Each structure stands twice: as structure tokens, then as C-alpha cells.
Length: 180
Image (spheres, rainbow, N blue to C red):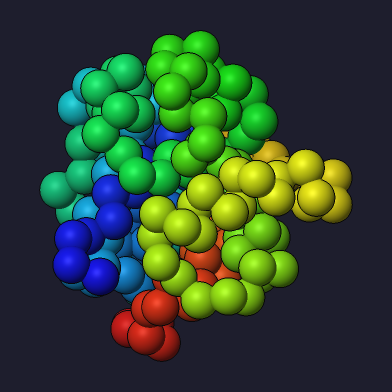
């Protein structure tokens, strides 16, 4: 691919789920993608939640230098692919920028659709095909729970869910094996 795929990951506060997914996706995809994250109700310039940061390190990533930011319409416009943690976040993204409809998916939905697609990855063609086939996806639980304020065990469970989805997505996007 000549240009890096621009991926935006969205959650509520941009403190736990989206930064973890951002860092794991960037680590796996390398120069194939430029991955950023934002929160629908996020504050600008906050560090990652300590439990989320610890989970990211456990999974081989680094939280250092991360600063949260609030989602803006320009973020959605500038992304080739928008990945949200919940269906409510997807709705928030689309309320902010309706033109993002054909390229906005929940993390679990995207992992499921890419796993089913299995046709290789041409970014533009695959994202368009996934959007068309969205209704063909088995309706399941596509939300990743918000661990903010929860125990370390809850953060570990959520991090493992995110990491599993990132693995499926990264493989479908042509990433090599994870580096640690």
C-alpha cells in the first residue's frame, strides 16, 4: 500500500480502551497505518489510566508520551477507518460527522467482519465491502465494557478482549506477527 491507512480509535474518555487499542494497533501495523485515538467526552492532555497503562505494558506496548484528546469532526473526516469501543460511540461519531458512516465500526464488529471476509486487504475496497456486508454480520455483543474506575482484574479482561480483536484486525490488514 502506498499510503498509510489512517485509523482513528474512539471511546468515552480516551483514557483506557482507545489508547490501549491505538498503541497495540500501531505496534502491530507499523508503517502500514497511522493510528490515533480520541474520546467522545474526553479531556485534552490527560495521561492513560494507570491500570490501562499497566495492561498495555503487560501486552508489550508502551503508554509513555500518551495524552488524551477530545473527538472532533475533523478527526473523523481525516480517518480512513474509525474504530469505536461501543455502538453508542459509533452513534456519537456519526452524530458529529455523518459522512463517517461507511467507515465506522465497533472494534468487535470490525474483527468479526474481517475474519469472515478473508479476501485480503486493499484498504479502500475492503472498508467499502465491509460496510456493505455489515447487515450480514451476525448480531452479537459488539461493545467493549468501560473499565474506568474498576478493578485491575476488570482492566485485564477488557485489555485481553481488545488485544484479541487487534490481533484479528492486524492480521487481516497484513501485519506480521506481534512484536514484543
